[in-house]
Amino acid sequence: MKKSDQKTTTDAALFAATTTPDLGIPYGSCLLEDSPDPCMIVVIGASGDLTARKLMPALYNLYLKDALPDPFVIVGCSRSDFSDEGFREKMGVSLREKGAMDESKWESFASRLFYRSIQYDDPSSFSALARNLNELDMRYHTAGNRLFYLAIPPFLYETIARALGEAGLSAGTGENEPWSRVVVEKPFGSDLETAVALNRTLHSHFQEKQVFRIDHYLAKETVQNILMFRFANAVFEPVWNRTYIGSVSIISAETLGVEHRAGYYEQAGVLRDMFQNHMMQLLALIAMETPSRFEADQVRDEKVKVYRALRPFPVDNINDFIVLGQYGLGTIDNHEVPGYRDEPGVDPHSLTPTYAKMKVFIDNWRWQGVPFYLTSGKRLARKVTEISIQLKEVPHSMFRNVLGEHITANRLILGIYPDEKISLTFQTKNPGAKVCLRSVTMDFYYRQNYTGPVLDAYEKVLLDCMLGDHMLFWRQDGVELCWSFLTPILQSCESCANLPDMLRIYESGSWGPPSDADPTTEVAHS
Ligand code: NDP
Image (cartoon, rainbow, N blue to C red; front, side, top):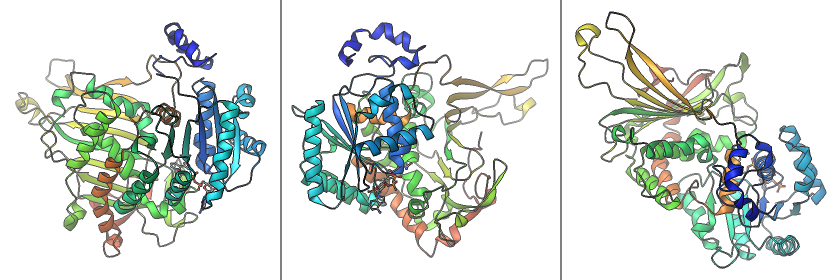
């Protein structure tokens, strides 16, 4: 069935979709808004890990949900030598290994998969690719629309952007002509200077509206829900400021170690891996002002204002604002795990931080004086991502004679992983004649009363790239402002003089460096 036909059945199918997730998803339902234009998805670096583990499963799932364009073609490119058949086989194997294979539709999906071997630094290779793509376009009627996904190591982004541009593959803004878009994976540079250079090269060949800088974190349902929760309810916004909120804690903890990514992680460390992107996005969603409309540029404008208002780190007394750690030997899920320096591919004397906690302030009227604690680390006690909004105590306790001066303050938790929930903790009277208070919690579980299909984060971002919706993607100014904020911290932390003193080894399976090493104070983990 063509997507245009499906649109006519929207209302009836919307309800069907909640009970029949295997039938494909109607456009116009909560899951999908529009049908993407016919297009070709060209994955550069297709022999790699990201393609096998994330991109191909996401594309196949979109296909199963009838959410890919009609028609579509996927072309994998990298230096490795595969035939079309060999590439289909490799993708099939990884989907099966991942347990993500529905055999019934694989053959028809695989018939739209192709592979072209390219040399990244050879212009003639990209000219040949351009001819190949034109042929596939003609054969499969993909209308000349192309999405180039850079699934290659970051040092190749500029080389590929240039090669695409010089081969004429970057032309096409989509206005009265086919579109060409480029998707760039994080990290977007490794500091301000490299980020500016990368943006300059991208912009030599693509306009900003053709560029999609992915942060798949933003596509998680519960992360998107932060905006809905804040701006579609009248009850919380009046207290969402320094008058009522004492502190905000954003934590993203993993139990995993560096796994097979030591080559990348040794260079990046936790500040580049987590803070420049995911943590900054969560911070902006919590702190931003209300956009006047739910449109990509209006939302991104408000986020950028938050980044502009970040108080620069006082590099002279940086230790009062940041704690850095590196995991040592310890126990996770009852298994002994090695310390970071004993992981394969890691320098035995490595000073790469795998944990950071920082206290940041936002210099504007809403947030003046409210500390935001951002914490992220590997090999911590529990895999959890949540935002905890600690409200202030009541200004005056009328119960002071019986209960003392302090009454436990309210806390709002926005759980992103593993609990996708919103919890509000408040005080109530304990039953009985005596005046006793107790803390109780009201929980909303995000998937409560919902059994229908959902889009995983990579499915959502891929779909949005095809639709040309920038809402969940980084804009150039946001990237550069975050690097402006973080680069002095990185320079200070990474200077040989400071780092050995700053870096504290913590036991794997703990919550990071011991608290007596922590000059910041924070909201406790829930
Ligand atoms: P890989 O290291 O698997 O590299 C992808 C492909 O690039 C390889 O298959 C190889 O293809 C080519 N390649 C690798 N190293 C080199 C090199 N030194 N010189 C030339 N070509 C090289 O990367 P991933 O798939 O893991 O990641 C791709 C991008 O996505 C990266 O930017 C990464 O930061 C980002 N990312 C990855 C995530 C993941 O889970 N893997 C998660 C989030 C972001 P060939 O030799 O065939 O040309």
